[in-house]
Image (cartoon, rainbow, N blue to C red):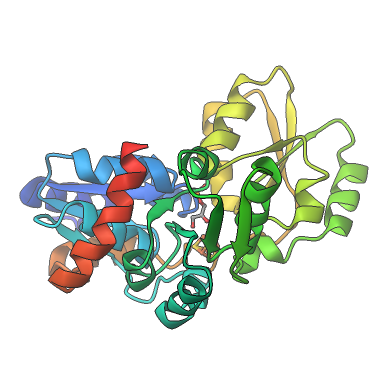
Length: 302
Ligand code: 13P
Ligand code: SF4
């Protein structure tokens, strides 16, 4: 019998296990093609809580799989590569957030979903890049402690001047690496393109953009725009859905190395191996999970 390819093997194991595969837009094209659903952080975390499948494989980074587990505690959630983490999430410790809360007792802690479960457990509400403004505007609090992304936080502060923001000093390394000079060079090379950037970019980059939005919002904008050419200011995995959904349009990356190494760790081989061996299972201590689930549920209610 001929040896099974990874794709047919995956199909077979999926049928045997009833697994549902979720993949973030930053995953490699092979993983996005293999997934049952692709999406941004918000869509995937919401979907995880609604799916009927008992087994979810999250092709992304650890905080995403943990959020899925928090919202679906009775399901088995697998993260194919244990070391696929998010450096930004790891920048904010629970101790630092506790200190901020003590110093600003009137403030609401809003944590970006790109945070650890411990930090979520200390938060009033979570948000993603697609709903941060809506979530913050929904709060009665005048003061907002925003963790961990100073860039998404400063973007929210610019849009919601009536509130006072206390920003944590975290950032996403691939987005933080992009500077105004990169925009200048890209604009010179592609003068007829619109620049679409993620709010995790620095303020100097956001100020030069034609549109600022989450990955899903960038995809929607490019699809609906009359324009035919775009410079993309976020992780290069997004080119897969952008090109797939818009065959007549052109997309240029803002820089040549806009890559999140952690998002690239999951390969088809890792995914198959994960399902074959049912690892790495996300397990969260029950009392921690109870506290961390609340801010996620509040976000979904908004
Ligand atoms: P979104 O999926 O919310 O656009 O966030 C991007 C991101 O950095 C995920 O790690
Ligand atoms: Fe974290 Fe940035 Fe990678 Fe997203 S792109 S997982 S925020 S390091």
